[in-house]
Length: 159
Image 1 (cartoon, rainbow, N blue to C red):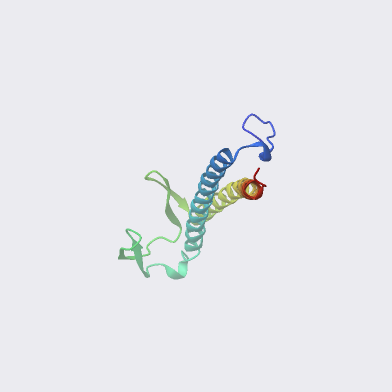
Image 2 (cartoon, rainbow, N blue to C red):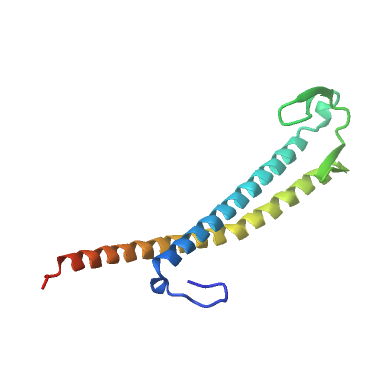
């Protein structure tokens, strides 16, 4: 296993206490990467949904009644008055007016960016998980060896 300094450490040489600490650290790292992956997928889903909503802004739907979301659970009635332009939330309260095609392109780029980030995190997360499995196997072997040694010591003939 690679240590932070780039050296390889033989897990079998570490005491059980250090292996437990390493296992806990790897647990935390796997959890962090899992949460990060979930957040990226959630954001990606929202951008895909926004991109799909732009497909509904067609001349056929001009002046039709719509529900405008104020929050995730509150909507107000409205009317689609412009099917050429949209306001896109680009983050931290900033909105930019774009054409429908510009909006679709913006969301496509965002989805592609998040997909690349997910593809970067996935192998790291899998490697951390594999490392944790290896640590758990070594812990199990060491515990079994300790139990066997204790049993042998208990079965030794007494003088």
